[in-house]
Image (cartoon, rainbow, N blue to C red):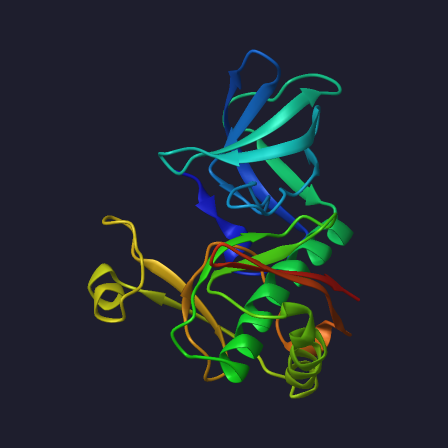
Length: 236
């Protein structure tokens, strides 16, 4: 199991780790470390990218994934010599990619806060997509004339930004997670995230610290079909 250091600090763009091994796949090599600041792509948020370096070698990272045993695989290729077992290595991630992805992810949480404030407490998100090409959040619900909701939703979510709400992060034991009806792996516990007094969600993604780190959220489109509402948005 890899220690997921990125969960502790979104703005940690460089750190150190110990090299464990290299694994081969059909396409690329994968580097395994004891801990990592590289966010692995899962649940529709792209991974971090850049490089892992030692005194004698450099590994370029273009993709990162998390397997079922909670081991992080850093993918692509060595530019020079390869690492030796137990080498101390330095990790560097692209800060612009990290901040963009964190804003897009935190934005859907904030949109959900606005939806809760405007509509009904028990409306639940069912799907989300945080890539920069067309991010969205989906709900299991039905709306008539969904485009008419856009101005109100955009106004509400941007008022929340101006309220300077802080992102609250808390770790729960398995027992605490059950009590709060939050998903948690049976052997791991849960990490929950929420803005201010709004509902807590289990979350393994990266976040900004407070809402004013997002200048503005634009609601681009709201589509309602077959009891699915899709809210598409962008972040400035």
